[in-house]
Amino acid sequence: MKPPRTMPDWVYNQMIDGLQKLLVLRLQGAPPADTISALAVVWEEALTPHTWAFVQETDTARLPTAFKLLIQQAERWVQPAQLIKLIPPRPEPSVAGLLEHKHAPPTPEQRAIAERHMAEIKQHLAKVLNKGSLKPSPPKTQDELLYEWSLVYDPKTGKKRNQPISNTRKKNHE
Image (cartoon, rainbow, N blue to C red):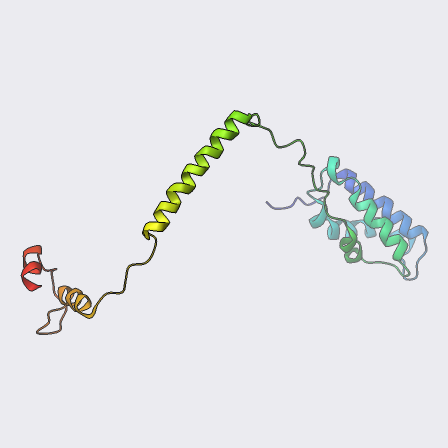
């Protein structure tokens, strides 16, 4: 999404209020008071990429907070970049009411049934593990590897076969 050319009006008004406070301080290097309109244009251009998406309900205090911090720290006239660094992050919305309970908590009977099912699952897993079906198969012998190789390559020429050996030929080959 491409940012618009101007910031929201309420943010612009907050920026003007902050600039007026800075001008009142008469900091060293401050621009003359008669250039406030040109100053506002430059600051608006610098702040717009950072403020164009501000939402009044959630972001109202962010720019004034940054100006307050800037005024507290300023010893010389400040640049827009200094203010941008001081803009606090957007407040995190509370998730307290966002999650719904779609199901009622389980009753003691439902909990007992679930625990019984879990016990059955654990028993089945124990049986599978005791049988060793999850253990890797033993390594292939040299004869098995040689047989598999002979299915793909011709033992006489060592070249790869064009077609796999049929099942009848496999039996004869063993």
